[in-house]
Image (cartoon, rainbow, N blue to C red; front, top):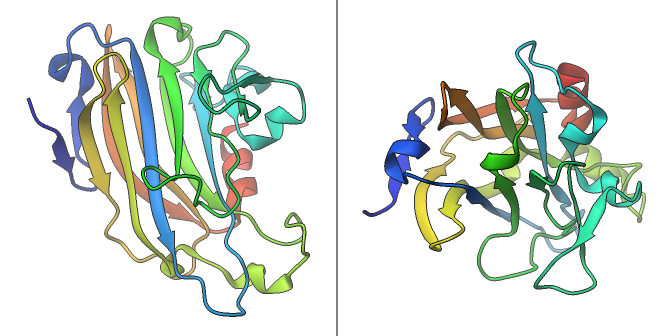
Length: 216
């Protein structure tokens, strides 16, 4: 069975497409339009594992690059020396912090989710991407305040069956977010004992802090 291309708002049953699916890899990519002499883009991937009240049950279920500094992390099994944030139960292993999105020629970032380890009180997992801005960047370049997803091309999210390496689905974001600096790419959610995926493409202003305020 080949990969399915989703459109915004479309839902897809992962359990039906891949019976017995346990570990999924979430691959994400983008192509920032860097201008000569312009500010540098720093795009970060994060995830929020939410309960029925649309809030994280504990701080561990906000998976982002800052967890590495808080020792909630694990060494990447392939890229030795690089650390990934991880939930305390080991269910979600987040992305390596890749400031310029050029770590590889494939997905710019990825994370891993072991669906068998997700606790029952978690009903959905929101996968997000945000543009990091001053004063968080090392160069303190105030021009980063004006960066938005309208300056980023070819954004996508895809889901891979980690045990087989086969891509299950892909969602290419077509909208041009000319003011927004945070995008919820998609979500995995429970339907009974099964898992489904929704292509979201929902954008916000306020970068990562807006999402933190929504879900914590």
